Picture (cartoon, rainbow, N blue to C red):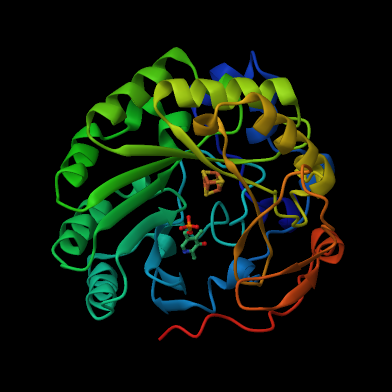
Length: 335
Ligand SMILES: *Cc1c(COP(=O)(O)O)cnc(C)c1O
Ligand code: SF4
């Protein structure tokens, strides 16, 4: 086997997902390596979304006012082929990505020293793959008076439902700050009986449940599929929050939809879904600042140019097509 194959974003699934994949083409496409489109080496050097540039102390990305992201672990229970963090997740950096107690102390100190931070967001990888670190960090963050919200982003309840540590999550929910748990779900086939049972348990813990999704060609680029997904999530008490444009990197191009098609689907969803089932359509440009809300086609607007959160102007067609992103004009002047 050549180096190229060995260095690629690893295929990683679970028994739960393999069982689902035998019945669902969508799940199969989400998780199984595609040699035709993916046989390129992982690029550990790229800095999507300026996360490396804006790392303040190991694992702490401070990019938007009032909230920080803590990248607690580069490990996930399974690797989604369209993952946007393929420079760190699934490319042999698991040990390096798992924050140590000492690194977590530094993260806590950074937050304690920044009075304006009221929300701490745990992401990765999947923070539930590092339960010791998550417990320690939440306990310490909750003691900081200006921290009012703890948010955890996870896909574990969809990938490995049997491994969810409900005791840990109940403990986090009881610490004081309001606890938001954001799931990542892209297709209704992910919502099996045992997954739905897990979601009911998560609600009972006292977590406010959100969901993030990605527009994916060949998987959920369909009005019926998306209607079913968001309707079911709302019924389960999971509030659809963001629906993202998939980021074009070398290995994800086969999933990337055109912004125009996404806008059309999103607009038809808005016409048929309850407001509580309807996520916000988000376009986030690589190497720039801002999760930009995309307008529906009910408005007569030109989508070919956008301005990011700090005034940088970009050509969206150019951003959508180039694999090597343009340099940012400016980032937030945070301390
Ligand atoms: C997405 C993101 C957040 C949170 O943004 P919200 O719009 O509040 O969900 C915070 N920090 C970073 C670095 C992010 O990428
Ligand atoms: S769960 Fe998230 S971080 Fe992990 S591989 Fe999937 S998209 Fe990437």
